[in-house]
Image (cartoon, one colour):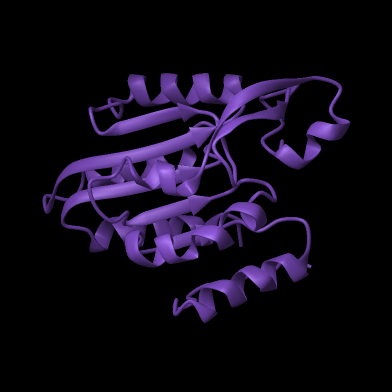
Length: 199
């Protein structure tokens, strides 16, 4: 099974369930893989009359690719925000590694800055600040922020309870970290539909 099979299922199910305004958040967006997939799928649903999306990417080249991709495919509408920046526990500015081969490397992380030969400063956004750009609850939030999930998600679990319907988190670094994230959501009352830990 392809490693992204469950991403496809979860994203498309969120579109199938939605009515009215569809809202999507992608943290660690790369070229906007999942937000663009969702917004393209929305075009098949007459029950959805508008979209809102926030897609955040820290690497400048990947962010430029995302903006180009959305523009060329007619996805960059008024409610769509493509943000160059990093997801962090605090607002401000933060260092992010420079990716030497952006067409091959989509795994740069804030944790790699200390050992990176080059880094840049980008704006840091909290998850709550990003959700504030939505006019209502997000139908889906896709999180793939290369280990920063452990620093950012636990502090806003109450916000997610109130303002996000479905979350998919790509966990990193260790199976212990993965299980701590599952426990966090379960203890907060979430139903865990897919739990895949790669050992």
